[in-house]
Amino acid sequence: MIAEVKRLLTRGVAMDQIALELSKQFYIDIDLLNAVLRAMRKKMTSGKMDENGKAQTSASIGDKAAA
Image 1: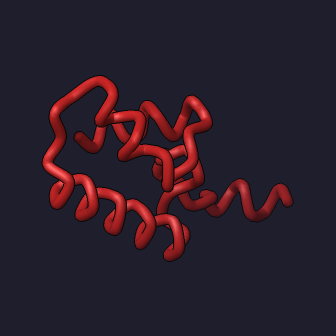
Image 2: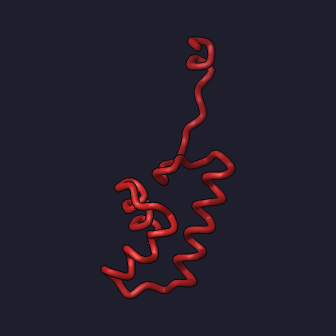
Image 3: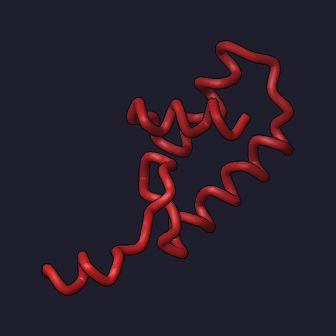
């Protein structure tokens, strides 16, 4: 389910529309989906994931020196 949520996010689907989009294609466990969305929102707010569901990498020392 995480992979499908990430796919929808990369296609520009808003988080509040993911349940609707998934329910069009699949029988979904809404409790599981809510758990996935909570975890993804938590990662996004802590800065570990961008708005497209991709993990952010920290800059290396060389990158910081070049900046």
